Each structure stands twice: as C-alpha cells, then as structure tokens.
Image 1 (tube, each protein chain N blue to C red):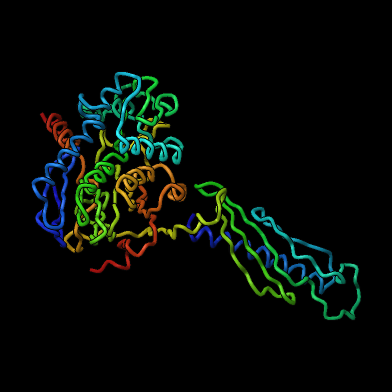
Image 2: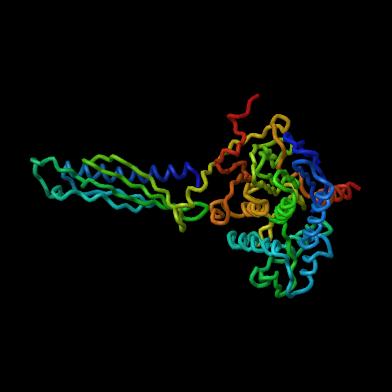
Length: 298
Length: 163
C-alpha cells in the first residue's frame, strides 16, 4: 500500500499495522524501543475497549449484557465527544450504529452482504447514559466508534511521543507544533492523483471517503445514515483539520451529513468537502491549496 | 450558501430599494398617483417622503424640497437555502434624493452574527487532480490507505467470485 516517504524526516521512523490500518510514526531523535513498546501497548488498550472486531473487547461485552460499565476518563471523553456530534447532527453521527452497519454487511466477518432486514439505529437516550464512571446501558447495544475512534487512538499515541512527531494512521495525520508537514489530498476517484494540499503544523487532519469501502456493487458504503439505514449519497469525501485528531476525525464524518456552518459552535476547524457532482467546498485558509483549472499546466 | 447566491439576493434587494426610491421620486416630480413596486422576497421600510410633496400638490413653483427625507433605510431579504432560511439585510442611505451608500449586512439565521463570518468558504468547482509525483508532499491523506481488513475481504470476495 502506497505510503509517501517523508520529505522532512525527523529521524528513523516505525511502521506497523494496528486498528485495521497502516501506521507511520516519526519522532525527533528516533522512536526508541521503549517508546515503540508503549505505543503498541496503548493501541492494544484502545482496541481492547473499543474494537467491534474482537470478541474480548468491552464493546463485545456491551453487545450482550446491559448494565454499568466502567470507563477511563479518556474513554468517557470519547463518548462525550460522540454525544456532542450526535446532538449537532440530529443523530446522524452516533456510536449506536453498530448493529445497523453489521446487518448491512460490515460485520466482524466482513461478510459484505446485507441482511434482508437491517436493524434500525436506536435513539441514544433510550439505551446509553454517560455516567461519572463510565456508561450505563439500559439494554445491550453494539457500538461502533469508526467515526472518531481512529482519531482518538492517534491522540492517545501522540501523548506518548513528546514534542516533535508525525503520526500517520492510514491517512489520518497528527503533526506536533514544532514542524510543518505538507499533506496531499488524495483524489477520491483516482488514487494516483491529488486534488490539493494542506500544510499542517501543530494540528491534525483526518479524511473520510465513501467510495473505497463499498460493497454490493456500490449499493452500500461504510458511512451509513441512521435515519434511513442507507449509505449517504451526496458527499463523497471530506477532510477536516482541527486541534486534535479525535475532533478532526469526528467532524470529517459529520460533514457527510450536515453543512459545515452547523458545526461552527462545536469546534474550530477547517474543511474540504467533495460532492458527488465534483463540486468542492472548502475553507479559504492560507494553509489549504486546491488545484483548479488555472493551476494546471500541460 | 454560495457567494453568487448572496450577491444575487443583495442585487435584487438593492434594485428593489432603488426602484422604489426612483419610482417615487419620479412620482413626486410629475405629481402622479403613487406606485410602489414590491418583491415577494423582501420586506422594505420604504423611505418616507418629505412632507410637502403630497400627490395633491399641483404647484409649479416647488421649492427645492427633496422627495425623501435624508436618512438610512433598511430592507431584509430572506430566502431558503439547503441550510435553512437565511437573511440578508441591506441599508440605503439617501441624501438629496440620491442613494449615497449601500451596506450589506449578512445575518446568520437563528444564531448570532459572529458565526456567519467564521468561515470564508467558497466553491471551487473546477478542481483538477495532479499526479502524485508532480506534487511535493510529506504524506498523503486518502481513503485508499485505510482498512486492511476490509480490503482483504474485498479481495477474498473477488477471488471467490472468479472460481
């Protein structure tokens, strides 16, 4: 899988697979064996709590048994961030979508064939209550934190990496304050091309696209609207830059459902949204460059 | 909403206000009966005509009174966009029966005005892809790089389909 080499390499970097994607981490002075171990440890912890794809995770337990679950403060924060997104998007972004997306075919076996009946996504307040110590479930529920979970994991890893780092988890990227990384925006329909660049310093950029993880001849993709139990159609790719990867990741998903103006009160961010008809809406920030007709030259 | 739509709406409102101002100014000079033009999309505070230029006035010896009292008059246009109902305010300043200033005041619907200008957003409809090799970047953000499990499942399915 293509991974552009860094032009401003800080030091020997590490690459590995985790949470279903390829990770690339650069740290000033190099990634020490201790740091590498603690990174793997942290990702294993995150996966052990939140993975929908292992049967020993907390999410797997929550899918079978109601009741009170203890969560660490950072995990509670992730749920609270989801609640914010849920409220801002009128329920379109929700972690309670696990059963819906699973019935649609994106289940633990990657069956990729939809059931004839797709479970409707439940209303948050019917099922989940965030408590001081974790979450209380009124009945079992299958959670899916794909919307912001990778960003969350990136932030957890970043906390281990000191002041100067670049963390790239399958194209969701967090850059520390001390350096600038020029990030290429992959053309949603042609992986050999870029549609623009974003200069990222001390921020995160996360992207979301609907056209890769598709199945059933494109009738389904992995971003599902819980109100209709169908995949979204109009927006095909989004990118968001924000202070943290968890925020950028969640907003990149939210922009499949609502206009950026409706998220302004939620966080400070910049965005690029690509529509199915080819139109691109984006923040006119000096760090963002899109390649238009006047820029192309033969 | 797009800048073009905004400009279109502003244009309509300005034209409406100027049309009203011009129409009534002509009326005052020609002493004809009143006529106002209205756009279904705008609510207008019509500039009040100066006292002394009523339609009954037949006098040919008008002094140099203005048809309009100098001042600033406002109109609000509202329209529906995909994001909901939006409003734009337009104000005209009239002095000596001449429009001397037009100001446009975008208004966020339902929230305070500070949110309206937080994004300077636009549409670039002519985005052209450049080859990855042509562009100097440190890293690439895109969907082809994600989800190894999903991709291998797709491969398996494709292989199964072939057999």
